[in-house]
Length: 420
Image 1: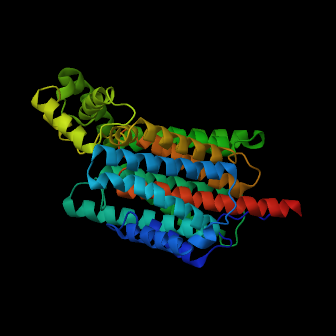
Image 2 (image 1 turned 60 degrees about the vertical axis):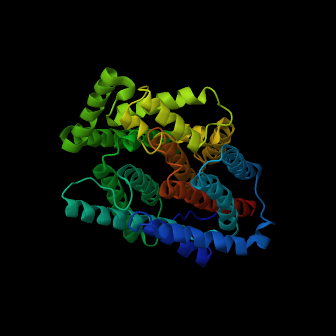
Image 3 (image 1 turned 90 degrees about the vertical axis):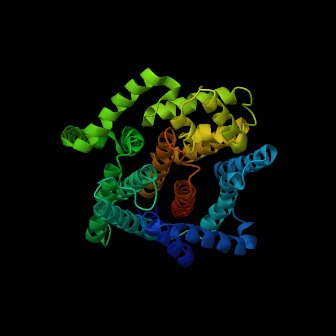
């Protein structure tokens, strides 16, 4: 079997640079990461003739087919509804991302580009957020985006870095001490970014992350050590929750918001209450058009009419979106598009799940990272439109492509070595 290496290995120089730059600039710049993705798309188009001969297995093909189907249905639905031009943005990005998948599978980046990019991105992102918090005198991290997007992205980056850290602890590496310092630093900065953002919707995903780590690493031989580590982790989390004024405040707001919603219903103006209100009115609209959805223009028109009729409050009606990824997709693009999106995510989750207990630690790490990415986005998406916003959408598609390409490359290397 090939020697286990998660932090180094062969890879294309150009895609490695672009992967590094994407993660390094995601949280610390306003839109540099978008230009990086654009550069990779142009490179993929240039390489298109050589991408036709890529050998994908059935599971990889299914993921790409569901992505293309989602893109096609969503574009067709947007044309049908006569929606705003910006409604084309999400499906077009899904369609173009299939090119990124093929390009990265043909020319995978060096693994170190992923991990070092995540480290630089988490550290620089928290540095920018801290600088902005210090400037405004309010310790709420948001960087160059909204606090929710910033917190969820920071947490996702931290979780991926912890995946690399777990691998490093269990395996030797020639630059072990340096990588240990970098991965710990990046993980801590990512977690601090999530903490100071106060993003409760992201914190809800932490139990799922813990379960996925246990699924990947617990064996009979290390059950005691994992149990002790889990107990220490839970005790530390409990202590932080008990001592942290920020967490106390955010948890208390949940009870306040729920109480306010019970009193005011669809006219609720609280954070959670306004969400519940717009979810309710969106569901009522979708009952008449569940297959094709409503489209953004009609949705805004009906929302305004219901607000004027007193059926929904001014605050919920004034929200920029439904604050739920899957409800937003349903409203904008219809039930068929939503179904194809769910099947794409389910196919990708199954693809990674097949390797979550693999004997090769590198394959297992990539699989764990992929499952944490998808599982995290499913949970984040309950209270934020993670697959609609530019930075969070690009992070999902880009990271999914990178992890799939690295897993594809590693799987082939393990098979070749095993045949010998």
